[in-house]
Image (cartoon, rainbow, N blue to C red):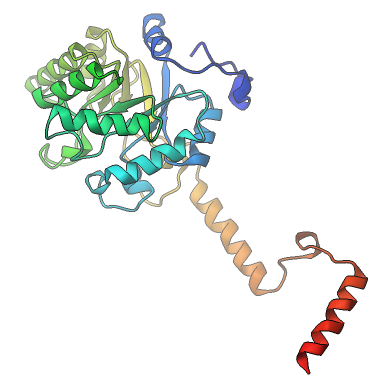
Length: 299
């Protein structure tokens, strides 16, 4: 993105804030948009310093940070806490917060109230919600009309994955692909500023991306979208086991983290930590006076 240079990635002071017009301009110029998740102060700092254009406080934090079995379990209060913490670490990137399941589906009024809390209490720049059906489109339109930018999300929508038959790719038949195209266009017509395509065949995602005027951020949707997003914990290899097919692991931090804590435990048990360099000294006269006073207490 044009607001970030190679030197800026390690120097927040030299980087301009990413704005909605700047995100739109990326699509016009054909510049790829970088989005990554973060869920707290240090991860927000790291992703921002690395030069991400958009930081998403995803409801995936339910699983990778809070230990829930799915994204459905996370509450508004928990997402507000994660978003507020991330906000304190993000200086330049556009900060988008996921609206959790159950916080916007009931009515446009509920959706507006929830979105307002994320902007007012957690200082998010925008919110994201899932789905391209009539109800979701209505919510997007209402929130945008209330003055809050919205990012859409179609394809695999984890909050409603049970209704989709599980966490599997969407749009693998002509009929379903056409439905996704209609949903994406409806999200655009509702004035969303961008949209996420998740787990959609690359050829389909590329065709729909070309139809849309708003930027498309892909995750498991091929290289032809306008940008890409990954979950930070997948990217860094923090959890054991196989990552999702669409996730690339750029580091393997889990073994390094376990190794570091194991080394600490070994040094504690063998009395090799702490050493003199990790402790504080006291004037010998003060130490002698302390010992004299302590001897009096022992009598």
